Length: 214
Image 1 (tube, rainbow, N blue to C red):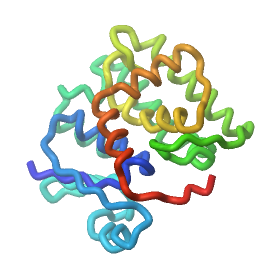
Image 2 (cartoon, rainbow, N blue to C red; image 1 turned 120 degrees about the horizontal axis):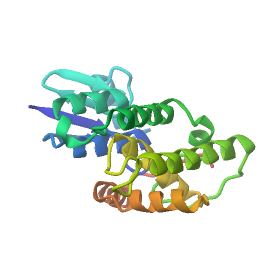
Image 3 (tube, rainbow, N blue to C red; image 1 turned 180 degrees about the horizontal axis):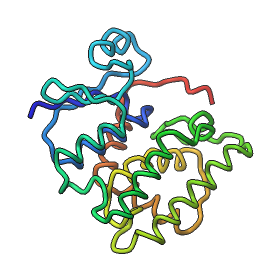
């Protein structure tokens, strides 16, 4: 299998971090090509590899798979034993639901707290932003209480749902968000996940800086 994952900066591209975590968990051998965001290089190269001009995008033996959830499903089909989704049907359905909620929701969180893994910032807490934070805290706590026995993650062992929320853990650290005790324990466990620690270390050494407008 000839596989290449195209990503953006670790520090700023939350979706690239998700894609990298998924592919690294899949057990599939792949190359990773970073194209720095908001640069002439990105403008020149992205159209040739991504039909949406966004990252991440996965190329496998001539196939082009874009959108992070599509990448997760493709990787799961290639190696169902990698644990990208829980084995239990009910847990798997919930994991897909909360992943889709992350994929399509939390717009105020995304706009008010842009990804900056190595930064430490504060922003005003609007009611809409606080509603997103409260929902995520409750979602994490509910998944942990219902499905999390036997491990530190949303569904016990690490899966695609944790990859989807890992950049939120980073955002909460960047902007100093207080969480409930259970959600805080989960966030601390995610921050220590080896693949995520590696990505955070890579972000810390990146030479690029973007103006986030916050």
